[in-house]
Image (tube, rainbow, N blue to C red; front, side, top):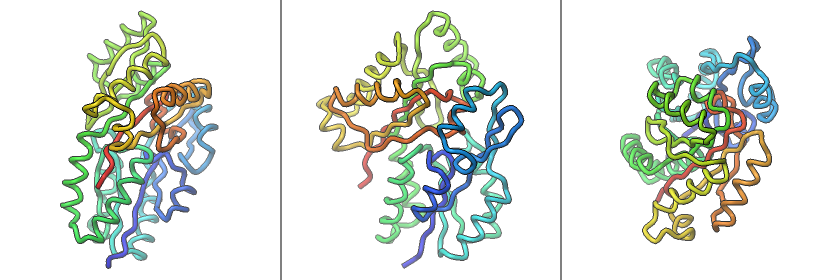
Length: 288
């Protein structure tokens, strides 16, 4: 049986230490805050880094260094028969293109681009492990994951829209809509699905947005019941730096008989584009 290793990056919302404890390699993205570079998931704890983003005047992200990437790839390709890296789609990040630089030299290094976030990566890794044990090919696995992604969504509740508007992930028309809504003192929330970030609804506050998101999630099951949703889907929460908001969202879900499979603090590479106090709810089918 092939010995398979996995590499994650900052979009997993794990730190390097957490990834390594699970036996996975890790590519840390970099965040530049007022001309000082930090390696996400390595240099500072996530709460501290998010607070620095909130205080910063000029904040931007950049890819993991090629030197770090090659060191991780080289080490793991010696240890494992096959090493799989799970970067987010190239339409949202250049990590996949950067990793492609190493595929010709390291023949057992395989890239599977995706649109997952946080603990969804951990579910995917368990599926891949089981699939390989059953004899499925990488192409079989890619086809299955493509189907899973069609029913995978993330809803983001932002608080300071400047991050979304300036982050380069929203089209000009959608930026105009967001600016207009902001002037009306309403709170839009965003749906991330496949390669698209788009406004999913408008609320008078984050509690109303949370209630609307719950309704959209329940629409995924025919009987519109929480039990059916939890039976078929993983629901995960990515928190920001505002503890009151974090606790309220968790509470509202519980009041609607929904619990999160996991809670992770947001990564700086996402927070630069959504804001450090933004929160997100992601849903993904349970893979069989």
